[in-house]
Image (cartoon, rainbow, N blue to C red):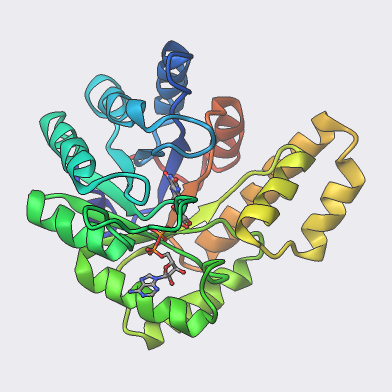
Length: 290
Ligand code: FAD
């Protein structure tokens, strides 16, 4: 099923995210995680492409496991900055063969060498999106950054490029994680002013270890609100308490979003079905599986 169809009615949709294992290790474990996560009946599950230390080589296989073995709509991430166009075309072909209809099209991290992009590479996600559109009938998602992408000099510049990305053929957007919902609400006003009208799925990250937060802030430059900083300061040395408080904080964020009319939430569940399970439990009367 195409995710655009799921996002175009008024139902509450909650999705989960997984990352693939490193090459040669743990594929069976991740397939087990897919199974456990699927039992929570998320609206769809996404699988990253080479992020968080995993390898892109398994993304198609895990997307296939999500869709064709566990019968949950799958969203395969696909990055382009570290690949040639030929490699990207071959992955699109594999996705088509596996019947995966949804692709989250991303640029990915910039390669370290200065020659980027070579003539057979894409420079921005918008070029990749445009190309995917020409390769088949895919539903295409893109990333957006309520606090601005770290490379963008101004928020306005980032929004101008976001509009180009949507115009290239994005059917929906998913936000970078944020820890203060007002950042999301303000962002929604800003994108409306740019006439960006596709659904915007709110990305929520349950932070269950204090070290996770340092990593997130250094990678994405997220603002940490004082209320959340106090939690981390208070419970950093008590892992069980930090985990419980992190799950409660993410749950509260999701409930506040839904209460304010945001029906689409993506949880960065990071291969932790136990954490996802507790959040879904906390929402058992709010999120009706469908
Ligand atoms: P783009 O949309 O290309 O934007 C990158 C930068 O270029 C921005 O600053 C933008 O303003 C600027 N820009 C865009 N177009 C132009 C233009 N025409 N002229 C000048 N500047 C321009 N990474 C992974 O490696 N694997 C994953 O699976 C993955 N999943 C992600 C999922 C989500 C929901 C999010 C939010 C991020 C994910 N990332 C992933 C991280 C992502 O790859 C990085 O944030 C990357 O730096 C930017 O990717 P993008 O697709 O947003 O790039």
